[in-house]
Image 1 (spheres, rainbow, N blue to C red):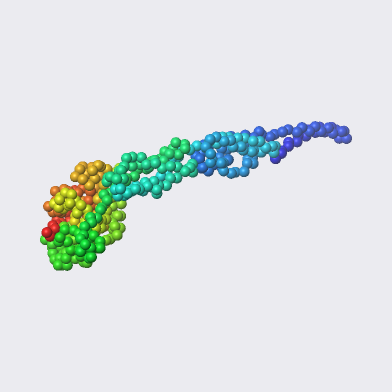
Image 2 (image 1 turned 45 degrees about the horizontal axis):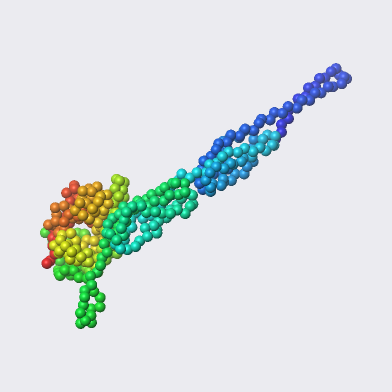
Length: 407
């Protein structure tokens, strides 16, 4: 836009005399002033080409606003065109430095479970996102042996071309492979026997608790209800050495309320800095029976009965119990009770409806030695009663029932 100041000096003489006019043109334009600031942006992030403009005086920005190309690392120059008050176009520039300081993001399971001798691709289901949009390689760090039963603390590691490294801890659980023992049969037996069957010790009823228990009272006056071979007392399912489950009973894994309660407890433990996980949840009749038979064969019946339920008598088959480990070596062993994880669970499990099922010193009542890792869901009200201020009461004591095999 142009402005013109016309200064006219007129000197008028006496009427009738000639006029004299002087005209002076004065340029009153201000010089355009543009203040720019260099910019820094993460690779592949949005940045407008006008982002570096701090202030413009006495001029108009003509450059169309578009995104700067941030797909490559390094410095680049961005030019801005400004029109001054004389309608003249001038170019100004600043620098944009594209950097990469953002770590990749790893998405993967916190726990992978397999059985000994089974090959497993630990990185198969791991996904990685990075602002560089590079294809990054996932590596596994830590020692583990797929042929050896154990719990291994490992780590996923990913590094981009800028040196940004991300890690994610996970647990690999290698379980014992359950091998079903085959019985050698004679020629005559082959006529009637086609497949080997698993068996438990004598005295087990494949249909669960006998109906003769139904309607009877416990020593504390509770009524025992037996429905389809399953025992209930005051609405609580019971599975111990006295009350068994049908061979066919299968809830399909841990029940939804049990999983929910355990997950709630694990989340609370994590907030307290503890990393806990389910080492063993639901077990079928066959799995439990094979486990007991193997231990009875290797260590004797008495030893097996002291720490392992026979097929049909295990709480694991109910879908309401789980072995929970973490934060301490020797889980599912006599040393685990000294770990931070075991101590935390013993003091907090009841808040989530879970009970320490086999407390210390209660072997003669429950029929099992102290298991600091075995927790059973019973609901928050009953769990709080059984917690008893830290002096755990067993289901057997609470309901007035026994836990002894019939034989």
